[in-house]
Image (cartoon, helix red, strand yellow):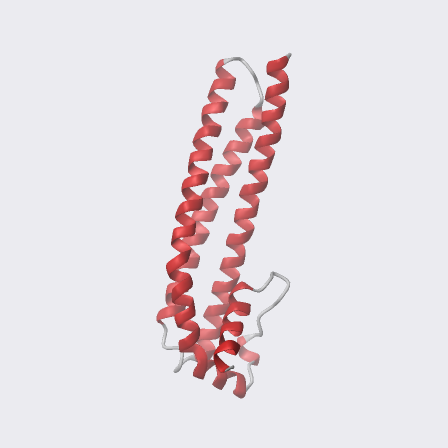
Amino acid sequence: MKRLGLMLFAALTLFGSQSVQAIDSMSLTEDEVLMIARSCHDAQRSLQRIQYVDPVTRVSRGNATTNIVKLMSALNARAANNTYNIPALVTATNNVQRLRQNFADDYTSYEIGLREVVTMDCANDPIGFYKKLSEVRNKRTTLSVRAREIDQQLEVFGQHISDLNNLVKE
């Protein structure tokens, strides 16, 4: 039961929705601080598993986005070479490249924060642990937002491909 509570605590803290706010670390009660100190090592083990899996997902997503951007750039070049002028294609490509770089930068910050949470002496600094865990959770939420922004820009690019298709048919 205690382990289930800890896993729930870690999951909610790390993966909670944007509308859920973490408790201010300065307003933690003494009992909450003691609970964090007692259960933080189990939380760190769970976070280590996340730390192990996250890079695989990031690399996979990054490679896919890189390949898509290469294809987008090639399409832009071919369209320009055939005198089809659709600046929105170039803009969408540039937006995806920019968002991908933002994602990479944010991921680096998240990864460093996660490493700090996993390696810190949480039993002796439960408030610091909780504060850092909340920061990592917020960084992970930012990554989720960045991924959605990339997906939205890819959809925009797809719409512009339809425009190009209509020009080619004319």
